[in-house]
Length: 420
Image (cartoon, rainbow, N blue to C red):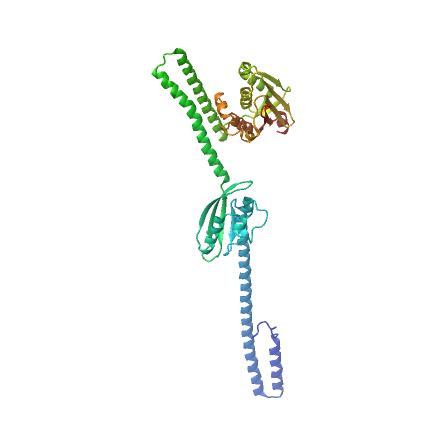
């Protein structure tokens, strides 16, 4: 029976049977009437059965359509969820088909690989020109074997990536690769190794001198002047050791945010005068002229002791590296929302190649000279951390033989009071 044909109206068989029955009764042909009645009854039963079957088929088709729509909705939701998960991941991810071509990836991968175009349809070797990654994807697709790689990508912005390549599943062809950016982690590990090496070296130098001269003194020294000289060296090295430990503790407090700085109006002129008086004996010993040029009433929003620590470090360095008879200038100016404080000298200056690393821990332009002058190599790093803790910045301009200019930019107290 063709279910898609239009059904015959229900009343048609009954009307036909009724007409035949009346005709037979009119002719008094009772056998024919009985036959017509039986036939109409059978037809009624067949029609009812057909209608029940039709209703069942319609109900089954409607249920199938409902299930299909529900399944399509579930699949749409699953795809949307997968897309949201992929796009929400900080790691880069790509999926490949059985032939190793990329069929899906997230935005994080494009940013990680600095890819400006869509990666779908490309092979791994076309995206990352490393044979080991291509081989790992091939092995995952064909042999169902996972791989773990660490790749170093060269270029304008070198990167170190950890890549995990795995097959998609037992019944799903293809592979998946997850990319982790290890660049910052490896850089921090390198910084930590350098820090440990530098601290060990900086501690070893004064400790070796102290131990050597102490052993000599314990063996006995007949020349009193020579013994006094050794004692002076031991004291100077112990002071250097103490300064190094104090600077290390200060760096540790700053980097761990344990140091709580105040936020209050600080008169810059008062802080500069106190710092100048502290450094003046060293300057006078080298006949260095200290010049102050500050506007009246200039105030920064910050911590008074922290500001003095910053200025003392910068001014002390300026006096150290300025030759006898030189000049060191301290100036300041208000720029609305900020205040600038500059420490300028006409000393030996710094080559441009050293400037980007000048505020790193233990970085020295002239290592031997810095140690001879009693420096720990941490002063400028402390300056940078303290200034940043007061929501400011520090800059440097320098040329060999022309001196250096350090500029500290801090929030203005007046602007802070108006906006706060």
